[in-house]
Length: 234
Image 1 (cartoon, rainbow, N blue to C red):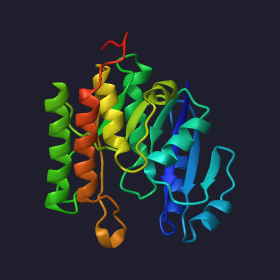
Image 2: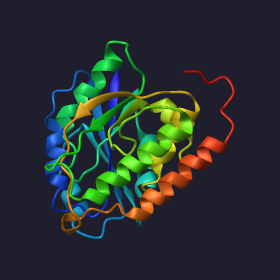
Image 3: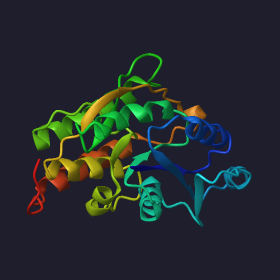
Image 4: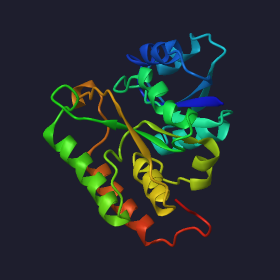
């Protein structure tokens, strides 16, 4: 099996070098590639990426910022692996957890795996951020009669072809809700494993806002109202 690690990047000049170093240093239990999409960064991100020389790394550039969902769409279109996982470049997630996500797939227990963040004082920058995340996740559970713990997690591991078949159209952070809504509508329940997490605050460049939470709930409602694709099973 080959794993494609997909990294959307926008204005992460101060963190991208460390993010790449950490991702490439992990001892993965399979072959892997790191596909980075520079989503129209206006700082020195592209210059940092140009200095990295590693055969396992491929960089694709958007000429203008199009949003996380659009960056992932580009990365997935260019992925050469069998499975994929998204890894943000903001250092909130630890790539050392990716082998933990792979374990249920490699031993045949799961097809889709989510990394479940356990929020605590060290892993959440605000009360309302955590409550917003829990609210969106609860909305998904109510709408789809499911019980998942962390809809907004970046760590979503699944077959590349499955993600392509979902045809994700959300260009921004709404892609997280759209991915989960479409999986649940197909009766695909993610297998969840605990992961480490360190949230950064607004002053450190946190980009998601309350508007993204409202959009996520709207997207979940839209997906619930759609008819389930024929032939899909649990």
